[in-house]
Length: 432
Image (cartoon, rainbow, N blue to C red):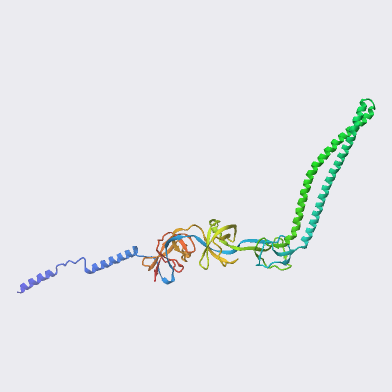
């Protein structure tokens, strides 16, 4: 029995000394590798697919959101026009002087030819008297020259008449003496004396007749010159007489008289502006426009003005002044469909000047965003409108209400148009 027990014990001991083979994938190892793999996959996903853009929480009630729309786009610029009379006649002092009388008060409606201001100038009056005296003296000298021409003509006429008379006496005497000489009744000497008298008067008549004809021709030319000179002098005399009329400033046309404050005894220089006559039956607008728009403004271009009652008045550019002052040029615009009621000279009106023909375009309302982005990008809301993402865009023309969108936006999309000043460099805005 003992031997059997020992044998059994040995057999059991031999069994316990047998090497037991370990398992390669235990539960802990599997869990460890699985967790590490999932962590690695999460890190890779985060690095590759996750959104790393910076975000900023924004309160919706502190921003402005507008919708991009398709519509008519009219490029125009807002300007301010000053109401001016349709026509203005300036009153400048042709001659200087001292204000003697103010015939009409400023603001009064006057007729053409009405005396407005009277000046006095004693030096000018004395000068006019001297010039008138000189002209009268010259006119008298011309008349004297005309009398001398007449006298020369009369003297030649008398001399020609005398020669004709002597020739009438000498011719019969010569004929008788020649007949008697041929009959040898008288001597040769008596005949030759009669012949000489006749030949002398014949030659003398030719000379006097030629001188008389030349005198008539010369007199005709000289008389024309004298008459022209006298006519010019009379015109000069009339003009000199009107110089003193220039001391009275008169209205050139019916209208409203306006002038600066003048006082009796005030000295006024030649060419100094005394006032103006405004034709107040109609008005125009005088508008200063930035010189950048000079190539795009032309005569006939259209503008519009909206009255307080909501009525739209059309205007048209009628004149462009070429000079540029302080970076602006001036244009005149006239109302095409009647003048708005109640406007006054010097009043400022806000108008819209159209720069081109209207056309269809994608429109983005204007806003403070442009100051930060220059129109190169905007924040666009997503479909859920819970966040806005930065997006590059391209803008074209603008007016005071809209920008023309060329690229980057679609109709119906919503854009934050208020200022981006507080958004920093964030690319996504989370709307709260």
